[in-house]
Structure formats: C-alpha cells, structure tokens
Image 1 (cartoon, helix red, strand yellow):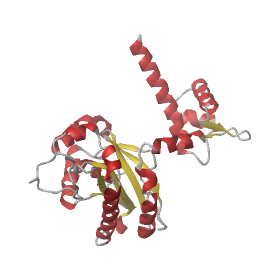
Image 2 (cartoon, helix red, strand yellow):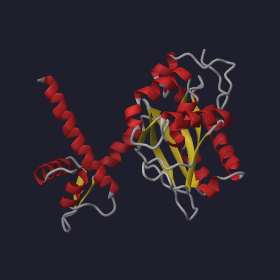
Image 3 (cartoon, helix red, strand yellow):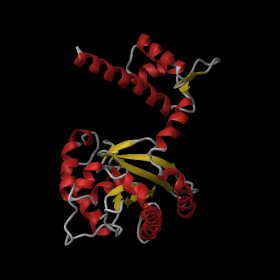
Image 4 (cartoon, one colour):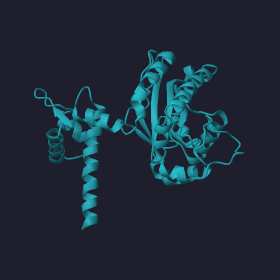
Length: 294
C-alpha cells in the first residue's frame, strides 16, 4: 500500500512539474488551457484541477480577461530562497556582470548538485547575436555540455567512473556517448578548461554555430563544486580569442577561490570529501592549483 502511495505521489508531482515547466517556457505569452493540455498530454479535467491548485497557492496565475495561465509570482520568492542554499550567489554577482561587460557574451554560473550540473544564473552580453543554451534552473547530467564537463573532468578517475555509470540512463537523451565524454574529459584535463561546440540535443548535432567554454571553481581540496562559463557563436570562441576568454574566466575563478574558500568547501559533496585524490603524478594537473585541506 505504501509503495502504491509513493507511486501516486510521484506521478502527481511529475504532472504538476510538467505544467510548471510548460508555463515557464511560455512565461511572456501565457498559455490557454488547451495549450497546457497539449504540452503536458494531460486530459482536460486533470489539467484544470492541477492549474486551479497551482493558482490557489500562487504557483500559477490566470489572467481575468484572456483566461490565459502564467507562471506564478510566488515562484520568484521560492527561487530566491533556493539560491540562498548556494551562499556564493550574491557575493559574485558583480563578477558575473563584469565578465558579461568585458566579453559581451553570455556568462553562466553553475554548480554541482549530486551528479548533475545546475545552471544558477545566466547573464546576456551586449553582442547582438545571443547564445542561450541554458536557463537558470536547468539541470543536466555531469558530462553534458561544457559546464558538465568542467565539473566532471577534474574529479578523481574513480569518481568519474561512478558518475558515468550512475547517470548513463539520463545521458541517453543527449547526443554524447561515453567514448565522446571521456575524450572531452581528456581534452579538458590537457587544457585546464572544458570546451564544447556540439549542440547538446539529439537531432541538432549539425548545428555548429554555437560553442561554450567553462572553468571549474574548486574547493580547497581541488574538487570542482561550481563553474563559470561563456557561451557565444563559434567564431567568437575561435583562437586566439578563446585563450583570452579562458584567461578572463580563470582570473575570476582564482579570485573567487581565494576570497570564498570556506563557502566553496561547504559546497563540496560529502562523497567527494571521502574519495582519495588523484595521484600527484597524474598526467594532467588540476585547472587551478588549490591548497589541500588538512
């Protein structure tokens, strides 16, 4: 009975999140009831019931004139509360703004949450052509995209093996097999940063006009816990400009690591603290040298 209750609860949460995700995707225009039904695959009765419940709790709003549903303003407060979990957020906002002004491209701040990379914030640059591959709140398995590689590549080999095995099913929806990911890990270790110019969604691999670079932010143990990334059209991340972009990212990362080490240490996953570090004679060094905890 308890198992059935858990399954029912999980199904209801999945339905609710499907509606919330659909409303978020159409945040400006809103959605009619029929639009929500089409986006979620739910029937009219279920969709109407769940939308009414979301609206009653401020998680959805309905326009009195058009009848369209919008994402609820209460989610702003909830998002703000969630960001406080990552104490680093308000402390480095000026650095993200400075990077965006300096590079004129989109700057993304991410963090590791379990075996996923979570996008915490995106700031658009002033360059006329925008590349927005992530939105705040998006999650991807570690190893997918430049941020996911940056957070994965500089972990000990045993931890990489564990993560790749654990999230194999989640990675199946993306056009990267384990061989490709391990090649990207090797390149990231070689250069000290992650680079990706392959579209992360299946069926769109032939789109080659966008790219991203990402540099990990590490705890004092050397474990990546967050990252700074730049996304742009591919031409803007060609050499030698890419080296200049990476240098700018590294300067910010080093300043963040020096100023906020205690906060970064709190972000380190518990299992990572217990995992032996990579051998000292490992072929490639960590991207940014850090003092090890004693």
